[in-house]
Image (cartoon, rainbow, N blue to C red; front, side, top):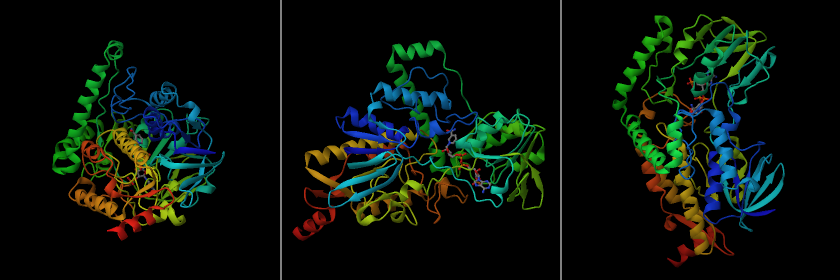
Amino acid sequence: METDVAIIGAGFGGLGAAIRLQRTGFTDFLVFDRGDEVGGTWRDNTYPGCACDVPSHLYSFSFAPNPRWSNTFSSQPEIWDYLRGCVDRFGIRPKLRLRHEVHEARWDDHRQRWLLRTSGGDHTARVLICAAGPLSDPAIPELPGVDEFAGTVFHSARWRHDHDLTGRRVAVIGTGASAVQLVPQIQPLVEKLTLFQRTPAWIMPRRSRRISRAEQAAFRAVPGAQRAVRAGLYLVREGMGLGFLHPTVNRFASRLSLRTLRRQVADPHLRDKLTPRYAMGCKRVLISNDYWPSLAQPNVDVVTAGIDRIVPDGLVTADGVHHPADTVIFGTGFHVTDSPVVRRIKGRGGRTLGEAWTPSMHAYRGTTINGFPNLFFLLGPNTGLGHTSVVLMIEAQLRLVVAALRHMRTSDIQAIEPTAEAQRRWTERIDQKMAGTVWESGCESWYLDSTGRNTTIWPGFATSFRVRLRRFRPADYQVATAGTTPNETEREHADAV
Ligand code: NAP
């Protein structure tokens, strides 16, 4: 089947793209998703305690405020509901192709179309928007012996609700954003919880509260009130960005975090294990009021020795100690800088995005990639944020997508891709801006790729990203008009000059 725009992924990015296209008159599009419902990461992550650590009024589309948020920080079910509600509110449902996993998207230079091979059939599209998301494919470390484990093993993003944890001996591996939320929820249920920690996290208090019915009513009656709250939160969060860009600013926050740790954990030995020894912000700062207190409970062991192997009845650490377990939960994160989707997208000459991004990811404005005509990649390289809502970045990218599509339409352009030079200049500026930020302060994190480059985070304020993406700049793109390829047009242009 032929469609004008194919969108991969029906999470925040893909649904945002669909709604923006619909509202700007580009109504010939389809959204492909391998799941049987929309929601992306908010559909997949159903572990106990799953919630967002960005305020609800900011972690939502600017064009779809939700006056019914029940808490200042929303839980997973409520965010998932919100996304499903957006589908109905904007009439996107007929455009969804659920249970359609995209196995391959290949650019055909001759036809100037993307050819999609999906589990639900083949499609062609003029434009491809990849919104597969950086947190969609769980990363599970290759630990020897895992196949011989006699109990139950699962990842936090594939929670086994059919496996009752009551009275069990549970091993949790990892202490990132997911583990910090799920550990306090399961600790009271289990007989024994062994938490395998490689690096302790910086944790700040979670200052959340219920949003009263009166406030909800006010937001419904006066939409401007909710916009004002959002604007206030936007400014506060941008202010928090200072701490990442100028690490000395974070000293105050570090002191507050350590004071909380002292108050919540009396045992000095445990406290020592939980004390981070790297600059706050170098890895994602977590928020929780109940994580540290839960680790101080008598049925919890925090193990800092490395895991050597898994055996049928537990885990053995490098110091030779055997830790009995009948359930292993991996809270070990996602394939962020090595997402499988990049091996499925093939640009000019059949080169995969994965190959183009080896050893390091590059994209012009985090969105378009030289060698990949008419591809827009949402939440691409260096579009992540440590201090505020990533939805702001998605929306900035979508403004650029719409501006590009409009330019193509008015100038009768078949295909666009950024010039290698524009992409190189953009990457160089990012690398320069990264220097001196907290992410370069020496810790290991999933923000960094195998070369040590930070290809994940935008080293600035959300505002500066939005400003830079506001306009489509034709000079930074090579184009193909009917009957040419971008390369030919480029050569003709060079000959003419
Ligand atoms: P994560 O932040 O990548 O944390 C993974 C954890 O697993 C880290 O503690 C890591 O240790 C540990 N780990 C990885 N491999 C290991 C191994 N072989 N042995 C021992 N430990 C290992 O993953 P996540 O917690 O799932 O969160 C991923 C991202 O999802 C977050 O950063 C955030 O962007 C998002 N998220 C957000 C929320 C929220 O809004 N509240 C909630 C959940 C997730 P090291 O630190 O030593 O690498």
